[in-house]
Length: 147
Image (cartoon, rainbow, N blue to C red; front, side, top):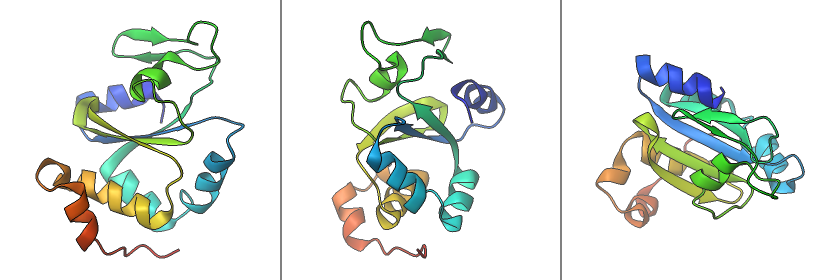
């Protein structure tokens, strides 16, 4: 979905949001696309629990978000929305998990294999991030998605 589509959907049915920030030239973005995002269990889970956005950090097309237009940042090749959502810590790929209404962004830089993606997406979707420290959750998590 686009940023604008998710904003509209959020007004009707609030949901958590997942944003995959990538670039066309990023090797690990392509590996994650091929090895992680093609898993059927992941796809079904994410479609049920999240609105998902695939955001090109170097898009020349501006993004509209929260009543503001985000274009390329100064002389940079990077879109200002990617800079804002990663809190200026650009790394590709970066996964960002938001609570409903684009609240409480949790940027996770780097390649995420399937078991790691499953753990983080469930941690956020089940609201465990509001009551259990991640390291404690991680110590007891058992992956169930098949490669």
